[in-house]
Image (tube, rainbow, N blue to C red; front, side):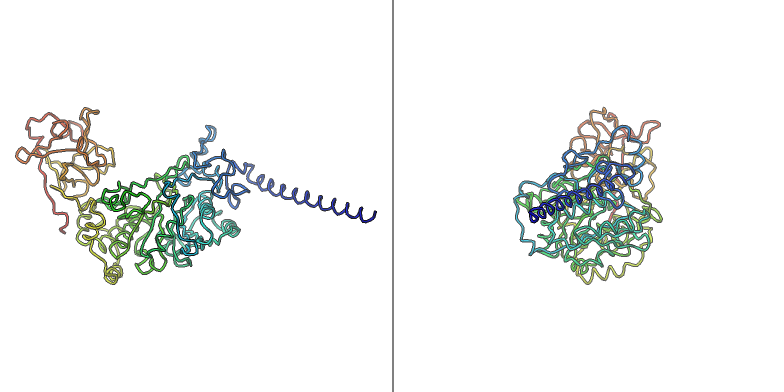
Length: 571
């Protein structure tokens, strides 16, 4: 009888302990939520030091499919929070309120092509491990931690050596000790490196690379989200050839709603006359090289620069970054030219997808101004890598030629030591579609005989009207080309006139190489420029306007133009 009582007591005590522990867990959970400034945990997302949800998802399925942003869906802000959204937007130049409403473990769709899903890769034991380097400056808590969680959730643990967060002198308290405490609890080693002063992306990435221990360094921007199967394709390409530098397809995360949009595998990286990075359609020659198999990685002339992986030793051998460049800008083209010209290859791995929040403007200021920094950096890359094609660039961007660019002797010695090829070789073999390398009939000024004015881009972007202004002989916005395809173009923008506007407006639109509204003929004898599809002649600006127009051809003096050829490669 006493034994039976003893057994009953043991059962009662054990049951009580279980319920006691359960109550403690509930208290901890709800006290954590109630301490967040009276905000609901699931609605408001992460506050400093606190994950958005106590329960993490695995990255392959959502905790709650109806929660904000799950499966990459747009976050809808109710009307009563619209003013709050606008105020918070100013902090990082994206919809921070929407980001804060989402889980740090939000689910994403698998946007890979079916062929990619069927691909097999070597066992992870045969692939290199990687250190992920992320530079941040005053980054939002929710975007930074969601980035880290997406890496952890969707990367094979054996391939993930460490995550290195490089703080480029952030001023927000929650990115200090609270961040360090938070990442210390994560299941993967995460290190926080601190720059002593604002140093910029280039030098901060060099710091991250210097403390990395993985065989491969993978650089990501601070506001990214990795998708299912993103890492294995990148590591497999480097395992086959360590001189490959590989980039994922960059998917678009809306800065307004955080909706996830799959990026295209039909574009690759190039650059325009001003050495601005641009996405262009993949040319037929590259499709032919891959025999139409879109799952085979793309050879890309340049990379956007924010997201790429490189063998750590190879990164050192080819000269890391140009440490003489400041802050940000031009470093992606400098590295792209160097990789190709010095024996490596640069690829977009079409079976790897990483989302990135694309902002319309930057929330950060730069010492001396953005223009000064970019002119310096672009002049450094032009002086070291572009040979006589640098003169083409200087004619388009005369301000860059005046920039103080420092000492490049070490970079020239690096080029000599690596026995790198010429920029002419790069254009002929890697990027024959380059705007620098097109077969032009004439490139230079287009002068009106009557007014002595020149066609002028006026610094306008796509869909802006072409202008006309006093000829200044300084190149820049007044350099236009008449191509073998009968296009009149400034850089990669072609003059276009359409029936829908009654041919009244001449707009600068991305060249489509299809003729039509972008086809122009030039009669040397009559000095007339004719818009082929309308049969109208290019004329001076109407009274009170700063844009040329089209009129019925009648040989008047204002319809006569001189195409002045300029030798773009001479000093």
